[in-house]
Image (cartoon, rainbow, N blue to C red; front, side, top):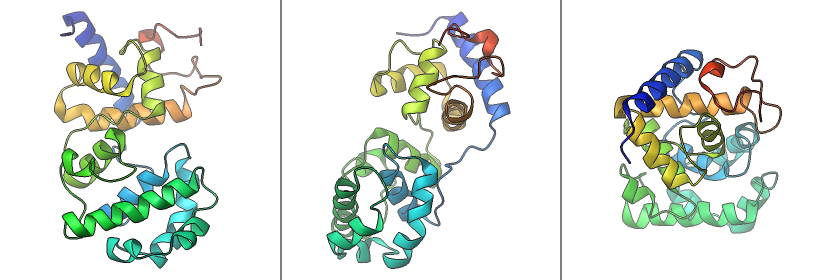
Length: 214
């Protein structure tokens, strides 16, 4: 449904406030190229960025590209990422996506959402993050923090990722979507936390219908 003028105005005010507070429109994951970012984002599912950043240096030292990771021993990859949640599934995803990159994309990370979504372990959140960071494509990065904050702010009706993505696309112009996504993500991590959100210290408190009630 098309947003009303008042809804669009409130979304704009929220966007301006949050992107001013959190201007760094890039991932917090450490990476050197698009392949490393793709791997890091797949590893970050249900795991903190800090935890991922602790294991990726050794992972990338051993398997620096898709060709070498495609031929990696599964148990060795599992051992390397053992400290992360769901490490067995993630290890299979890393080897599987590396093989597909070699077979279908000449070892390169695809620059389209459609291509990215063909890879094991890659959903719309991961695809949008990689496409925006690597190829400059505007994207709504609907991770857990993003969904929680947008719901509390009344920008979305629920926490279904695809529905939230479509709603925010209707509210936020393409050129601002990536920066808005990163700003909301950081706000969710550091201010509007799942437990004990810092409502008194929130930059958008006056625009938030959930303030002091979560």
